[in-house]
Length: 67
Ligand SMILES: [Zn+2]
Image 1 (cartoon, rainbow, N blue to C red):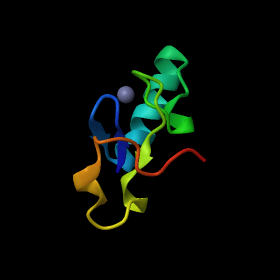
Image 2: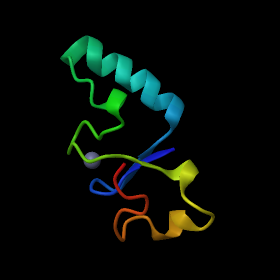
Image 3: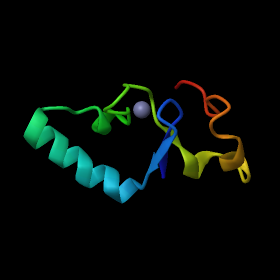
Image 4: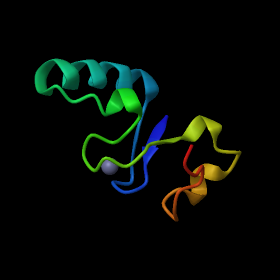
């Protein structure tokens, strides 16, 4: 699950793969390939890598930091 802190929306990883292909084909947008939100260009948070309970805190700011 990826999460955009700015849009406050989460997207399943298998859905990202699908949406990424669609966006690249139709709009030539490859942001999802870079794990960035196609709407606001914010880097997604990988919720699977957030420690237990991390989900509750998502929205209060970025939990994982920048690479
Ligand atoms: Zn966003």
